[in-house]
Image (cartoon, rainbow, N blue to C red; front, side, top):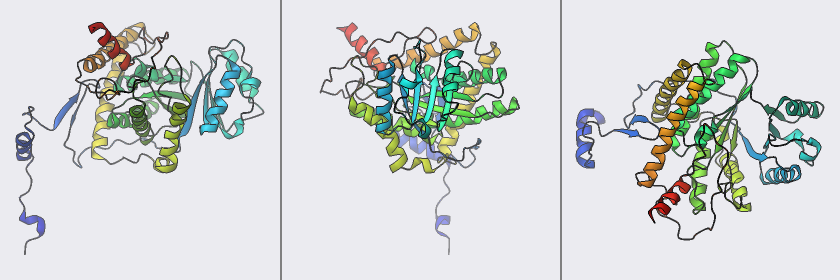
Length: 409
């Protein structure tokens, strides 16, 4: 008596692809399982086997990420009120940006905040501010304190903010991190990444970063404490479709924590609206992290998708592509040279242009932006950002699409 599977003919990959072309009426007759992401500039296949190599990294002992909130400190009293509000909503990590302050009065800024039970980050503009903060906390230690300075902060979020892709974020982060590591091989480094909307690519991005950063540290013969913050941006957000925004923010947050990060910051999607964020969006921004942690229990699993053929493949491909781009930056003298700045500007501009073109031509359909528009007009409008990175303004695709429509009228 034959065993069950012996009665069936063993599948042949070539025949299977031929049948796939026929049934799907695919135009890609060479390989119907292959596809390319034009914006990410990555090629993938839909065929995965146990032969896919697995790259590993030094995993943390816990995946219990911090629920972060950002506070841009311009008015100290208003910043204090905002911080207390975020804590009451459920945040447990406060990120104070005090770079716009001339007179930093910590007793007012932290009034009523029990820092012994939360995580605190400060971004400073000079050594005087940093020393003031260290002195203040010398006898009242918080649960966690990190001061972001020019010598220990890698802000790869800026790449995402102006329309860059995943491999450009990674290459920038690695090059900047290596430059800081070379100058001071013992100081902890804080990496900040933006989160894109391509779910699998974003998971692979964070996994690839850990792998590549481990490699750089090994080559430099040091292993310093590294903090990774993931933050949602506004490239793909719509002021006219709040519920789609919540879905986007949720999948973005999930991709980050599954990829292993230390802190997740979900920004209210209307933060950059002319009227500012609403009570609803502020609450939802924190609730997303709470749901992922307390209900989905993602924090109970470290690198939960390890061993997934598709994710391992994506991670390998993205790591290879990012490493090549990193090597190009290094060949131009490192991240701090003018030649590298020009190179990065050209790379990101090309990607940014692709995003805008695909949206305007509706090759990329974004619900609430250029497809299935919400009939209930919100009345909200984006404010014009004055800050630039590499001589580029932040990219908001909805804003670009509205400009295109206005030009056609």
